[in-house]
Image 1 (tube, rainbow, N blue to C red):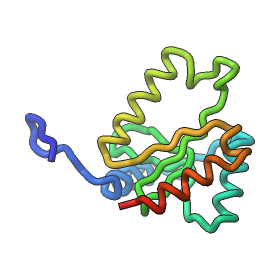
Image 2 (image 1 turned 120 degrees about the horizontal axis):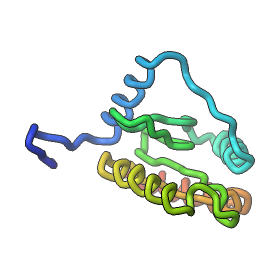
Image 3 (image 1 turned 135 degrees about the vertical axis):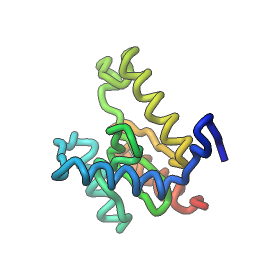
Image 4 (image 1 turned 90 degrees about the vertical axis):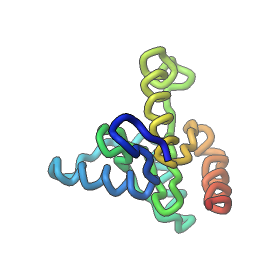
Length: 138
């Protein structure tokens, strides 16, 4: 278990998910966001494959970070990264650095983050990786 000057700081992803959800609920009503075409297609694919998932899942006990999709039972998160070919937010300096911080904190909390592009959703690779990650879940 990791420690800092204040004591233990490690927690498993289920505990982090619960703390994040509880913090979110204390803030009021569920916030919603508009899904991209890639996110909408992946949501449909997950439903068709009968994979239980959560949209816009808050995973961190303090930060307002969210995963596009989460499978909390398996500590698997999926991020659909748009704008890859158009110099979108995820590939420019500040956005890339912010994503790195988010994904590193998620890994520390025990999450496995699958990063996919809309093209990977469209051709079925994203769903195959999700299914493989579930099969390999501890």
